[in-house]
Length: 144
Ligand SMILES: CC(C)(COP(=O)(O)OP(=O)(O)OC[C@H]1O[C@@H](n2cnc3c(N)ncnc32)[C@H](O)[C@@H]1OP(=O)(O)O)[C@@H](O)C(=O)NCCC(=O)NCCS
Image 1 (cartoon, rainbow, N blue to C red):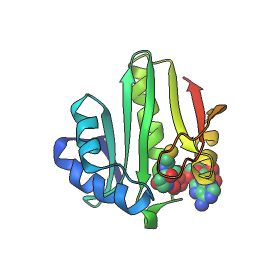
Image 2 (tube, protein in one colour):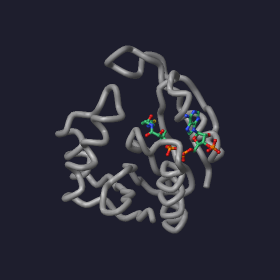
Image 3 (cartoon, rainbow, N blue to C red):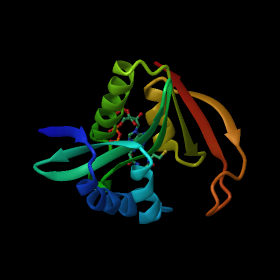
Image 4 (cartoon, rainbow, N blue to C red):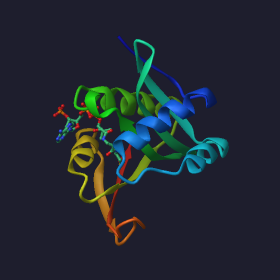
């Protein structure tokens, strides 16, 4: 029913529409594009040929950094984020990565719950991390 595959250049526009839809402070499209060009990896989730979510991460062995994960609003809380993150973690394990890092807005309880469910620990607060509203970031990590 749901299909996970590697994100390619031809997926970027569709993924960016989801980014605009779910992220109150979305990346610029140029950032999205250049992230891909500098070697970040992405996975997408499709249902009936429609993209419903994606995850982008930066792999720098032996660590990876989750840069973005988004699921279409109407498809959230149905296990799709879990499928994407689990697929990414499986890939990282195969590549013998040891640790996964991320930053999340301190107000984003849903995402914090989501990461805690996978065993991510709350490591530190980075003050005024987000430039749009000076919100603090919670730094989280997971050893795999
Ligand atoms: C965060 C996000 C990727 C999670 O994906 P999802 O498909 O909605 O999550 P899942 O259905 O796989 O849920 C997994 C866990 O997340 C948490 N979660 C999901 N929906 C939640 C909600 N409405 N409220 C609180 N926690 C929630 C729960 O711990 C849930 O586990 P459970 O089903 O056993 O209760 C998705 O909600 C999203 O795209 N949010 C907007 C973008 C965003 O905030 N990205 C993260 C930036 S760091």
